[in-house]
Image 1 (tube, rainbow, N blue to C red):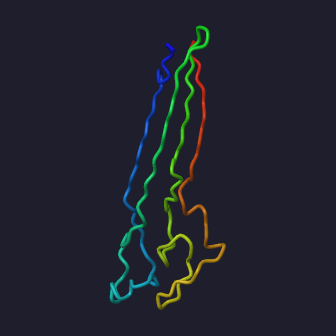
Image 2: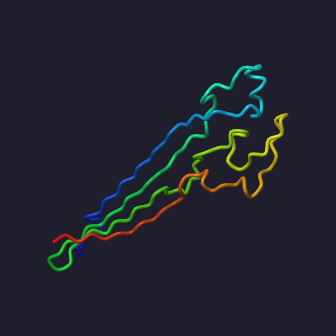
Image 3: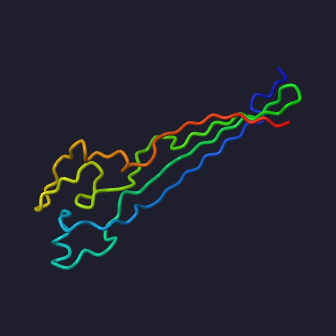
Length: 132
């Protein structure tokens, strides 16, 4: 029909991966006493889980009368992955700090389930730019 449908489109996909950041476990961390055999727990002895996030940017440029526009869609954390930011030093988990000294980890309470221990979820932003 003379109209180019895929004209003036742009797409960017950014994947970021990072290995887990180190953390220093507490003396009651499961199995740590047998590994260290009475020695001091070294700083940054263990690692948190790895993190991965995919971001998407989609834009379409168009013109109305003699003014140029660009519609842009940003999607941060496209797959809504729960990335661990912080863990409890006593358990190495995000959902519970309940650790009995013999290494038995109990289910966490509502207070233990802190949403700030995870990174940001999916975030969608839509914008329009005008060039004249």
